[in-house]
Every structure is written in C-alpha cells, then in structure tokens.
Image 1 (spheres, rainbow, N blue to C red):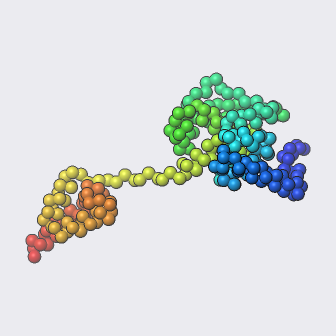
Image 2 (image 1 turned 180 degrees about the horizontal axis):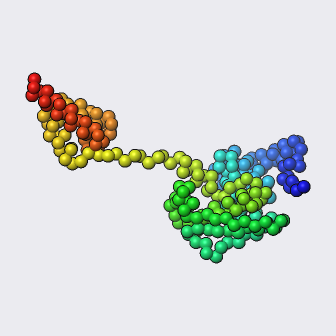
Image 3 (image 1 turned 30 degrees about the vertical axis):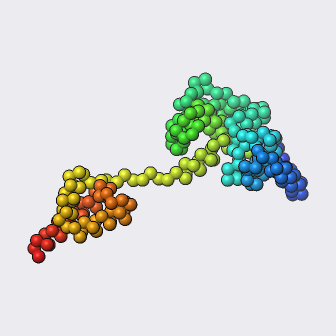
Length: 248
C-alpha cells in the first residue's frame, strides 16, 4: 500500500488550526510591508499557505513564484519545473520544440513510469489564447509552460497538489469574459438607399418616422446604418403611402 505523504493528512484538527493561525500571523507581518500591500487578505493567506505546503519560501512566492486566482493557486513555470525536479523526477524537452509546439517527456523517480505530452500553437488557438499578451511575444515559453503543466497534472500530481501553471486560470477567465463578437449586419445597397431617399422626399411625415426609428435602433440618424431588411420594408411602406395619396 502506498504511503500517503500529504502532511495535512497526518495532522490533528488542533495542529492544523495552530498552523493556520501561524500563517495568519505571518500574513499580518507581511501586510505591514509596502511591497505586499497590493495583495488582498484572501490572496495573501492562500499564497502563504500554498508556499508552506509546497516547501517554498513565502517571500519568493509573493514576488512572482505563486499567484492566487479565485482561491486557486498558479505557479510560475520555473517554480513548477523546480518542484518536479526536486522530487527526483525527470523532464526531457524535445530538441525540435519551437514556437509551433512543445513536447515534453517525463519520468517518475519512484516507479520509472514515463509519459510524453504536447501543447501546440493549434491548442492555444482553440483555447482562445493566440496573440494574447505574452502568447504573442513569448510563444515558445508559453507553450513550454502549458506543456509542463499538462505533464505535471498527468504524471506528477503528487508534486503539484492541484496547482496550475501561471496564466492557466487567469487567462481562461479573461477568455470567458470576452464579449461575443457582434453579428455582422447586412446593410442596404447604394441603389436601395438612393431609392429610399427619393421616396422619403415625397413622404415627409413618414420620413420623420423613419429618422426617429433609425435613431432609436442605431443611435444615429444615418439611414445607411439600418439593416437592409428594414430599408427594404421602408421602401415598400413609402411606395404604399405615395400610392394611397395618389388614389385619394
């Protein structure tokens, strides 16, 4: 039976409370330093707790090693790489890695189990990450980071303890918040607009109605902004008014 090495599983409730209280005291001390006042109380305790749990220095983690995103922890690729290697495991990068894709091979130190994973530019495009921030300027580094995180979750979950690589959560949130692109509006042709202008010149009362409607729909009084179907409908209506006036 595999021994559970998670220190929290061996702690009593009182020991866990004592540890958490100690972490809160550390946070209160850090809060007095200008460099750490940018962190919320939740982010501060999350990072300090994660740092201690992972065996890292809270000071190093608060200066770019760890990040708290909605209560979850992101690790910089450097810290993630370090943790995996410190545990005795092996990571090998494919010599052909470039800004089109990254392939990593991992080997566990305890049982020799190996795994090869990849993360490509196509994966980044599908995830909505392409050409966003560092993905545009540091493509190869970002591909390596995502590939490393994928390898870590699949082969070294006991090392990462549920943590993600830097940007994996925050960038996903940014993608989710992006508004859906506005649907393209099929606008009227120049000939249709010219016809409408000529008809409205003969129906001044209806012309005022069309202008008001256009303002309500588009925020401007430009008939060229109206959808084509609306322009065509206005043309038919204007023709009908002219005919009725002629018959009357």
